[in-house]
Length: 426
Image 1 (tube, rainbow, N blue to C red):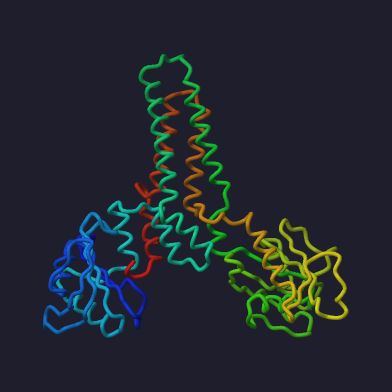
Image 2 (image 1 turned 120 degrees about the horizontal axis):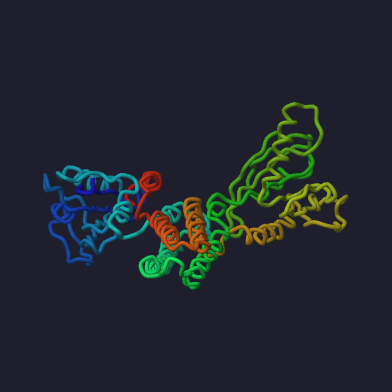
């Protein structure tokens, strides 16, 4: 399929001021020239009239850019048309390209997949690009950008260089050292130091919480103001609010961004003893959600609060005269007046610091963390070993794990799933 020349709309869906149509593959230049009537020099933009090669009808006037392999984003010949963004214009240009023999419409993520297969990016950078496309908050954008710009790739390259030096020492010991001669202590130390460095990376906050959002659960007794709070924070009516205890029977999830931090805010049923079988199910679910929460907002009395490592005590309905006195503990809030909501948002953001990756720092996803864990185990075995043959094998295993991390080997099972996340034209 890589011998095919592919094309797609790479910008947003029309109508738009400008639409970008990309062509990549061995026939990219000839096909693009058939419509544009000649191409500019490589990496140079020029205005051209686009005409249907079959009828000669004028399609549009566009800015045309040409890139020659291998110095292009896909590693192949590429041409881009930057044309007017009306639906009719885009459809006409795409239709004209589709009638040229040897060209076909691109599949989702196919441009990026070709960049990966042609060595322009590695698998970790492709994963970063997928995350960047899906990023909805500033913290997600920065973490994805750190990965997409090669932060993890460069780190793995540095680890690979150290591994090669250690492997060279081990191979020399196999070939030249006497059977009863002890191994060079620097070899074990080098392996142990690398293992500790990998462990430090594995102990960093992971990317899943940043991508999926922190689980922030609001819990407490009935009529304590939980549903009103979720509506106030969401700034829309997401939960039903009444004066009747037990109104909320099941949990309600609302994705939000507080101070750039992605969260899944969850309203739960009021915690109390009840004979109602439906409400009882909601109460049990509420207790389980509170226990599993990353951050728990407690709307009840402090003495009744469940044990939780990141519990934020709230003093709700502080606008009511009966609750006007300053609380002994907790953040005074009012969903009616908005009092205390800004302080609550700051407190949640403060708790999130320990749970989320630092801004701009590479955060490992599940696949990367699992493979890095395998590498750490192998290099720790090497550090503890005394047989140079076994030690050299553990170092080889570690190198092969790093190759799987970057996509040099053994990743066919993840490629379709990864590039299927991309949109057409990317």
